[in-house]
Image 1 (tube, one colour):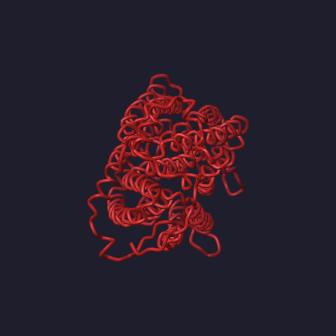
Image 2 (cartoon, rainbow, N blue to C red; image 1 turned 90 degrees about the vertical axis):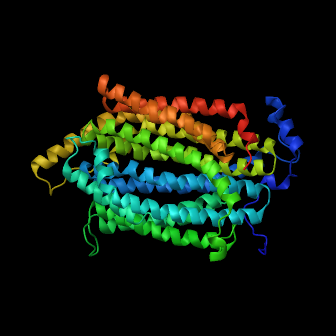
Image 3 (cartoon, one colour; image 1 turned 90 degrees about the horizontal axis):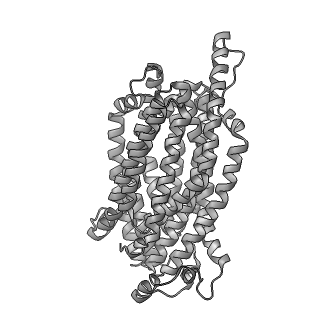
Length: 509
C-alpha cells in the first residue's frame, strides 16, 4: 500500500470493536427497545456529535449554495420575469445530465463509506481512482450531448406554449449551452465531494463551495448588468459567472483529494488511474445503475410536471421557479442529514455494527425534524416577505406601460405564491424524513427499491395529479404544487416501509 495512515474525522464508531457475522444476525432478533440501547462506553452526546460534525458542514455548504442560487435568481430577476422563466427552462435539462454523474457518485460514496468502516485504506483509494476515471468520462459525454441538444431540450421544456415567447426560449438556449460547455468542472467537483463525504469528511466541500459561490456572486454583479467596464451579458452573464465559480471550486477540491489528509488520496499515475478494476466497477455499478435509473425516473417526472406548469404562462412559471428556489432552502436540511446518514451508516455496515447503524439513523432523523419545524414556521409566517426578495420593482427608467406591467406581474406572483408557500410549510417534516431515510437506504446500497418508489411517485403520480389539478380542476399553480405534496407524502411512506423491513442491512458491497 505504501501510504502513511492518513488523518481524518474520527467517530464514536472508531472506538468500537469490529462486529462479527453472528452480531449481524443477532441484530435482527432484537426488540425495538433493545435496539435503542447505546453500546456501553458511548453516550447520546457522542452520537449526536458525529451526526452534526458531518451534517453541519454539509448543511452550511448547501445553505450557502441555496442562498447563492436565490441571489442568482434575484440578480437575473432584475431583468424581469421573462429572464427568470428563461433560466427556469434550463433547470430540468441540466439536472437530467447530472443524473449520470449522481449515479457514479452514489455508488462511490456507499463503497468508500464501507471501506472506511472496515478500515481498508487500499480499497478506499482504489475506489477513489476508479470513480475519478468514470466521472471524467461521464462529464465529457454529458458536456458534448448537452451542447449538441441544447436547442431541442429547451424548446421541449417550453412545450410549444404560446405564453413562452421566442425571446425567452432563445435566452434559455444560450444559458444552457454555456452550462454544457463548462459541465466537466462541476462533474469532477461532485465526484470529489462524494468521495470525501463517504469518508465522513464534509468540511472540505463546505470551504471550496463557499469559494465557488462567492466568485459566482461577484461574477453576477460584474457580468449581468455590466459593472467596472465588464460587458453587460444579461442571462448569459449569470451562466459565465457560475462557470468561473465552478472553476475555482474545482481547483480547491482537487487539492483536498490529492493531499492525502482526508483518509483517501488521488494520485495521477496513468498506470493506476486508468487501470480497469472489475471488482470496484462492479460495486459502483451495483449501487450506481439503479441510482441512475432512479435519477432518470425523477427527472422525467419533473420534466412532465414542469410542462404542465408552463401552460399557466410566464408569470406563473416565474412564480413556480421562485418557489422552487425557496424550496431549495428546505431541501438542504434533509439532504445534509442524509449525507451524515449515508456516511455513518455505510461505515457502520462496513464495520458490521448494525446496532450503530440503527442509532445513527435515529439521530439523523431527529435532528432533521427539529430544523424542519423551524423552517415550516418561517415559511408560514413570512411568505410575502420571502417572495418579495425576488421581485424587481418599477424604476424611473421604465415607461408607464412597463411600470404598470411590472406591478401587475408582481401582484400576481405574491397572490399565487403565498398559497404555494403555505403548502411548502406543510411539507417540511414529511420532506426531511424522506430525504434522511432515502440517504440511509442509498448509503446501504439499497437503490433498486428506491428507484421503483421514485418511478411510482415522481414519474407517474406527481405529473398525473399536477395535470388533473391544473387542467381538469383549474386550480392553477397551487393545484400543480398539490401534485408535488402528494408525491412527497407517498414517497415518504414507502421509504419508511422499506426501511422498517431492515433488508438494507443485509446488502453486501
